[in-house]
Length: 248
Image 1: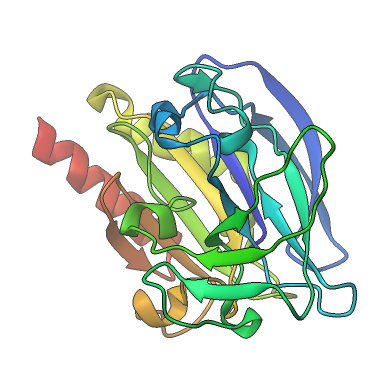
Image 2: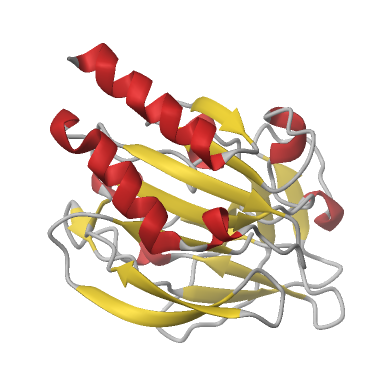
C-alpha cells in the first residue's frame, strides 16, 4: 500500500513536490517530518525469531522481500526512528510455508503487509535463504497500523484508487491541516493524516471491511478505530467541530 503521512506540531518541516495521485499534476505541499516512533513493543523480538512485514513474493526471482527494521533494532531501546531495513528471503521448492498454527500455507497466501517469520534469521554474512516462511497471526492494531492515530490524537485518511484525480480539497494537504488543526487546537489533540492508495491485495481489504462504497473517501481514526467516513471534506470538518463541542 502506497501512502504519504503528515503531522502537525512543533516539528521541523521540509517542502516536497508530491505526485497528485497517479495524474500528471503536481502540487507543492508542506510536509512535516515524522516524530520518533515509540517502538517499546520491540522488546518482544527474539534473536532467533526474525519477524517482519512482507509483500507478495517475486515468483520469477524466488524472493520474498521483508521489512525487518523493528527486529533489527530490537536491542536499541524503546524509541527509535522509522528508517526501513529490508531483507530478501530467497526460497525454493524445499522451503516450507505454513501458518502460525502449523497448518499448511502457500506463497499465494502472502499479501502486502503480511507479518511473517523467516527461519533461519539473518546472520552476519546475510545468507538470505529461507528454510521456512511462517505467516503470523496479526492483531487489529497491526493490520490497521497505517490508519490508526498515535497517542490521543486523530488521523485524517484520504483513500483513493490508483490513477484517480482527487478534488482540490482532498489533494491540498496544507489547507486541510491548517483548518483541522485550527478546529481542534483547544482540545490538545494532535492531528495527523495519510494519503492511501487502495490496494485490494493488501492484507486487509479496507474497501470491504470499512464498507466503502466509492473512492475517494475521507476517513477519521483515533487510536482504536474509525470514527467517521464521508466523501465530503466539509462534512469531516463538521464532525471535528462536533468532537470539539463534546470536549468543552
